Length: 297
Image (cartoon, rainbow, N blue to C red; front, side, top):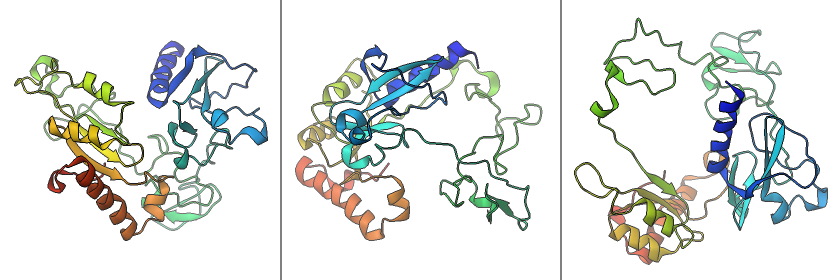
């Protein structure tokens, strides 16, 4: 990828993860350039200060050997693992500078049984567990190399000569239209969803996005789905969104983190309390009918 194009793509990622501290800024003290296409923290921050909201809200990105500083919005901290700004209760890695990539797995280059692969340290595990979203290797190597060049479970490269519509479709970048149709000839459906709190910090943005001058081809106004979590939500705004035709869904009561807790620690009772509990809260305080509330994103 050309350096200029790479820089533009990374800058696009910046705006999805947080906001500039004040436009394009350089940190006050020179920082090392950790050029791995990910955001990282200040490795020179004093140990006694890394958990402070001010320090934990800062993060950095190296572009073309130049380091830029960013800062989460007021009240949010930066999560290095998830590369997003989130509420304080959901961030537990303020002392982590950057995530190191786990060692490369041995895969078939080992003495493991058939239908098994090897971790970087030689531990054997079922081949179907590789890159399944759950860490199974002691060294984490089964989830750290999940690209098309390393995933033995990945699909083979698509061959346009053998792939024909409607049963098969090849497109390296995902933009090629089947049958080489023009854009004007292809019907499109766009799904718009939001999650987390609804309040006075974002309700104006939602109003601008769903303005009356933006309509579907049939003349109907566009609408979205809002997956609502409890903390910081103004249920008057939720009621307004529902009344004008938006779909309301339940995210959770606590928006608890880290994400792994939900798959590894949460019980059926926890899921019930979080999802049904938030649905009942939405019903009580926003007057949205229970039967109209959708499930979790």
